[in-house]
Length: 150
Image 1 (cartoon, one colour):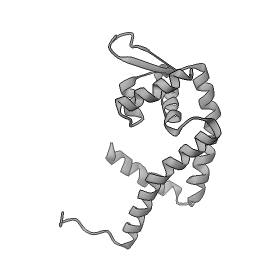
Image 2 (cartoon, rainbow, N blue to C red):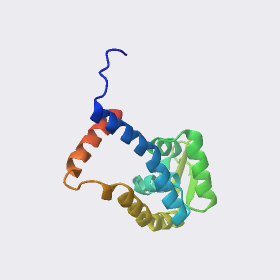
Image 3 (cartoon, rainbow, N blue to C red):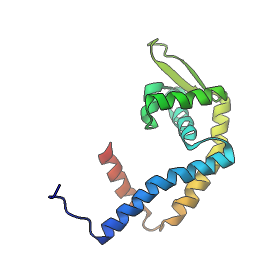
């Protein structure tokens, strides 16, 4: 590890600010959604992923991967949404061992109602804090980092 160059002052400031954003932003987005819609950020993301999937359904393993959640965590979230009538879960038609989740009409309605709240939160907490002229450069840089991460 001694071969690693130390961060300069600006790199260190950037890194520390990024770590604060990584920790604080999900909490803030979650609070905004919960307070206004009763959906947690994780539940919102699950509904988004399902609504955007082909035929609006995903195998539970694929849903877990799409949401960056463990199998047990996605099971708990889907069961909560299912108990509220927002998601249905069934056996996969081609593979009886696998389970598939899909949003119900009520789940899609909840998602549609939560979208403006989430958008307003994202805008207030992040987008409006950025310099619009720098945005294309910031996007390209973050996309490059994301691509390297997988």
